[in-house]
Image (cartoon, rainbow, N blue to C red; front, side, top):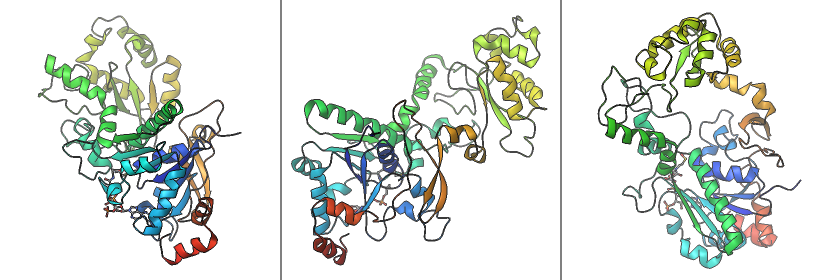
Length: 416
Ligand code: CAO
């Protein structure tokens, strides 16, 4: 079966996480993604946090599957010549260098367009063009701080906190992938390429929109009724950190289950969905709360929400998180166990759906990686091993029309 993006050629000039996450997604869906890396070293993540001597690190292999690797020193004349040929033959070029690096290399947007008017140039930067911080280099946590995630994550009596989820990196890569696919679709109509730019700050903020909502409600009202600070605590003029409170209109919290004293993940997330109050009371063995005016509206419950959570914890004390979910699911209560990475790695449902897949790598052996979170009825995503450094250099150069002699000369000149 042919893949949806088959025939789309992508120059993958990306490194670390934000860019590679984007191009990996496009490679899964069938694009020919050629990862361009510096000879000798390659993407810095190949050697970061290695756990097998001399093998590519998981950091690299989990972000670069289904790609081809071309080593190329794009600061040499031969390297520039190869990149020029590649640009003429490709549909998309993706990069996430520090600000200005591509221009300094000699490949400005104007020049790229002159080589190939159909080219889509997709870039990730820390901040958007024209932003006061546009010159800054940015990593994950820097973006989480600048995008509003850190100031609103954590507990009110602790410092701003970053999330383990790659909101700045992989999330930005996903935004970029949407931009690229949109530009490819427009090119079908116009025949023209364009520049697609996504900043990490903007991508984080896009996921923090409910906090911008809350800032405006706080400005208007002086309080936020779904935060733990309400009604007894104090509000300042900025959105506070709300711990594990639900971000929407449904109060929720992380609650202890049997074994929490020794297992750091013996918890569930419990949501008190307004219209599910009656089933919740039935599940907890508290039928008298169903019609009690002190409990039967969200407003009435708000000032005793932590007493209610404490009661639920006492109900959970003799149940494991999985036993608790098996009971609560029968009452249609939105809840889930807090899963450790070990539990996720071994979860049969995630293996069955292809969300966690095992890949065989020539040097690393078998390893687990995350498969496509997007499921199609008519596309099968097969995750293959990431390429070794320069594994496809000769093949790509030959595809570009270089003779064996020319290829050898490039190797001798250390241009590839
Ligand atoms: N051949 C020759 N030179 C190459 C090359 C190649 N194949 N690939 C990269 N280079 C050069 C670049 O041209 C650049 O050279 P100059 O600085 O002399 O112009 C140099 O390598 C360094 O590039 P960089 O600035 O991108 O790398 P860095 O390690 O200093 O910074 C990072 C890394 C991630 C902070 C920066 O790239 C960045 O801010 N990127 C944009 C935001 C982003 O994507 N961050 C997320 C990364 S995931 O956490």
